[in-house]
Amino acid sequence: MSEDEHAIEDAKRALRRRLRTERAERGPTWAAERAPALAARLQELTGSLEARTISAYLSTPDEPDTRAFLTWAAAQGIRVLLPVIREDGLLDWAEHDGTETIEATLGMPEPTADALAPTELESVDLMLIPATAVGRDGSRLGGGRGFFDKTIAAMAECPPVYAVVHDEELFDSVPHASYDQPVDGVVTPSGIHLTPRN
Ligand SMILES: Nc1nc2c(c(=O)[nH]1)N(C=O)[C@@H](CNc1ccc(C(=O)N[C@@H](CCC(=O)O)C(=O)O)cc1)CN2
Ligand SMILES: Nc1ncnc2c1ncn2[C@@H]1O[C@H](COP(=O)(O)OP(=O)(O)OP(=O)(O)O)[C@@H](O)[C@H]1O
Image 1 (tube, rainbow, N blue to C red):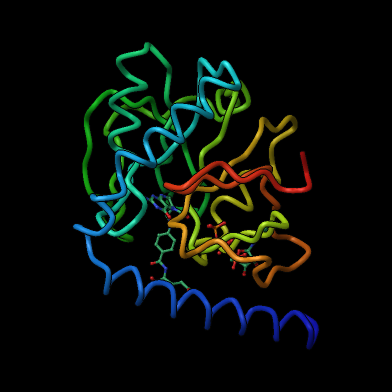
Image 2 (cartoon, rainbow, N blue to C red; image 1 turned 180 degrees about the vertical axis):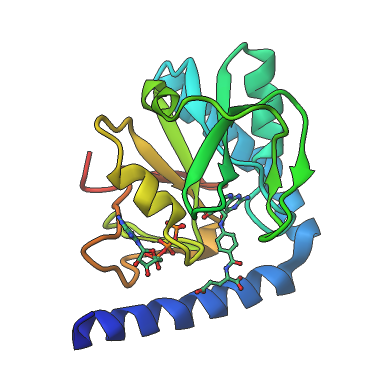
């Protein structure tokens, strides 16, 4: 890693730490209060893209809430794929069937359904991904393990990718390196924000 890359990684770590603390301090009630507005935005986006198969994730209590949206998607017959952490640091994908368990090493909620063939992810019409912070320029700061950067970089064909964050986590730009994958848009409770990639 070059000196510049080290500086970027340091800046990312500092911002990630600050925003994680802020999420923990706001707590789950704060996130739950914003859940209906966020679900409405996610429904609007899914509808506008006429997406029938999507990928999303099961939110933790202090992340922007995806549960209300997932309930709506199931009722609409929209197929949802959810990430399952693999031992090798990559992600598998399993169908959202209402089941969930807490993953042992990183404590993330995950479905219990069997993993699908990795190529199934390429069939989605929209990817909704978690983030710690996002820039209006499309830059994204994730959880710090590169799960989504690696997943997106490995896809032969990539559908529109939207990061989901709290309004307080949307900036002009966030520290990013050459291997960070930019997003097409950002969904917050207040709206759908398109980035210059569109
Ligand atoms: N709800 C949800 N599910 C998800 C994600 C997510 O962000 N949210 N992920 C999105 O990627 C994956 C799990 N990602 C994770 C990324 C980092 C850590 C973690 O424990 N990080 C270290 C700090 C790492 C660092 O800053 O260098 C830590 O908190 O101690 C846990 C899970 C897959 N599932
Ligand atoms: N496209 C990639 N291919 C291989 N390794 C990668 C890729 N992107 C990131 N990594 C590795 O993953 C590590 C974490 O990356 P980074 O800090 O960008 O994660 P993040 O964007 O916060 O996390 P995530 O993508 O899981 O939400 C980096 O040290 C990097 O070496």
